[in-house]
Length: 177
Ligand code: PRP
Image (cartoon, rainbow, N blue to C red; front, side, top):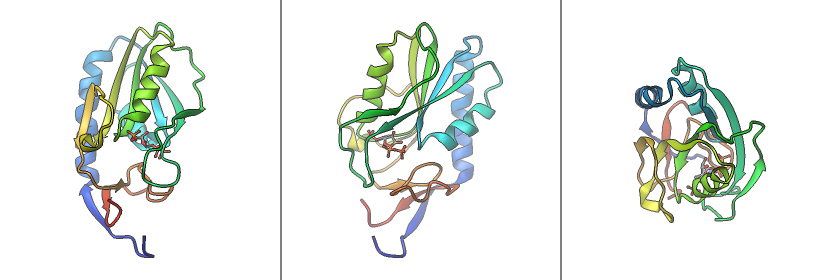
């Protein structure tokens, strides 16, 4: 990457907000009386989680889990581990995992297997973005936001080497695909 990274907007903050609203309406319909635990996958999901839960006007709990997958570069290593675990008991609870992106699917497959072993009452996945062209393992996304092309995307929580998470738009980082 050169000293001047080239960014082009893929989804504006307005388009993201509309998508988050749509997802919140779907989630509200299914979880209104269930007092679910929403588990955000750090770090990428923090901004999406914050915006999403502001639109959910019913009792819920928020948890975060931190996994490692990409390291500092782009490619998923396929070796996933829990870096920071959960504080809440998920056994018997309705659990909704909140992801910023499903790319190869390796991270979320690992996490869903990990959580399933804890015997939640139900387990579903909400992903703001989906990059199906790079999938290495099948993933069911129960609440899906935006489909993204096979380009490296940053912003709205998504990073390149820990940078660009603070961009309000989702942008393509040119030259990194
Ligand atoms: C990203 C993203 C997902 C995962 C998706 O996280 O937030 O958790 O990769 O990739 P996959 O479908 O190919 O497994 P990353 O490991 O980059 O950590 P971060 O959220 O801290 O940026």
